[in-house]
Length: 215
Image (cartoon, rainbow, N blue to C red; front, top):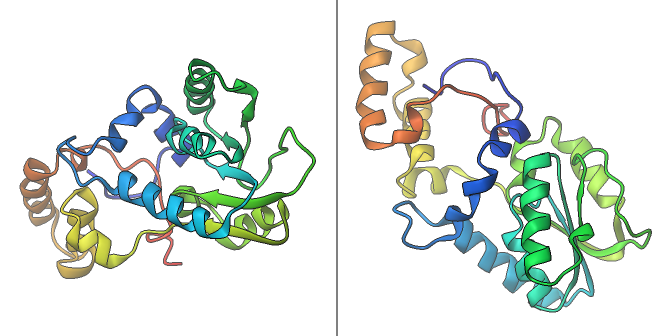
């Protein structure tokens, strides 16, 4: 159940999904394809900005990075998860790109293989899980050239309410029916109800995000 303090940092939790993370980019995966739509939005934004160089901050399994390279951008990416870096490097090598375009790094402490500042730094969902949003944004901005762009996505309550996935269930239990204020028996009954409909809820809460930090 997703109740209580986190037991793992986000990068460790996502690292456990590295080999299967690509299913988030499949339209008919049986879940709301938020990753697909988010990537399309970033593609449109980058097309309008027309950058030459792009840095994907928190590149996960490499699908967005691969997409940016196919679109002709001189793109690099990094992730804090060694598993995600390995999967991303494997993807790039398979597509005849230099796998060293992907490197290990934290949002608040990373060193790109190129010294040149980037025209655009993008964060597709990664900033959502940062421990200190202000610090992270300030650090990412240091790697953007003057006049460049920092683009990052955050979830919102409308998405949580309408996407009909585990985020919807968490929103309902936090905002509509705050079960943390009820008895243990009622909490368990509500969690059981939602877990039958949203299987990912039936797991231990392992990391926090911006919503839970009340940012």
